[in-house]
Image (tube, rainbow, N blue to C red):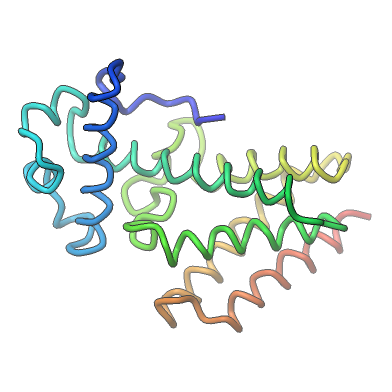
Amino acid sequence: MPIDVAPLRRRPVQQRSAQRVERMLDACADLINEVGYDGVTTTLIAERAGVAVGSLYQFFPDKRAVVQSLTLRNLDRFLAAVSEKFATVELTNWWDGVDTMIDVYVSMHREIPGFSRVHFGDIVDLRLLDERKDNNAVIADRLSGMLRDRFGIRHTEFDLRLGVAVEAADAVLNLAFRRSPEGDPALIAEAKALVRGYLSSTMD
């Protein structure tokens, strides 16, 4: 289910308009990869997408809104990929599910344009996904629900503890990708071990 925020001035109704918005988001992602968030402008996004700047402003009030939409699209893709893995891969224990989530996140770092620069929006705003919560809290809430549903977790403080685990894993994974563009394998393994160890010790 998509996150309930609306960075768009108006939602595209016709398929042609929807495709134009997608081109703008793709252009924004490519430009972030090339020049970073600070180097991106609405003019550059429009030029790369092959649309007039006025057309961009029909849908987005500013650059931040474009990046917010891009980030929300990435989050939807992340959650959809995790859901697909949960439905198609044999997972014996909840920590298999956690490992799967980390694997999907790592794959997006490697494969999705702009993701390694923006992640889930912290570079722009710590509350880019939801003005009421930090970005990591939004993600933790979604992941907690998925893990509870898939593995029947009923621990009353699981949401709180997964939130702590997400913060810790995020820091280690950021370090992994600072060490190597593909993500340092040893540090990725440490992130998985950290989450499993912490949650295992608190779920009794």
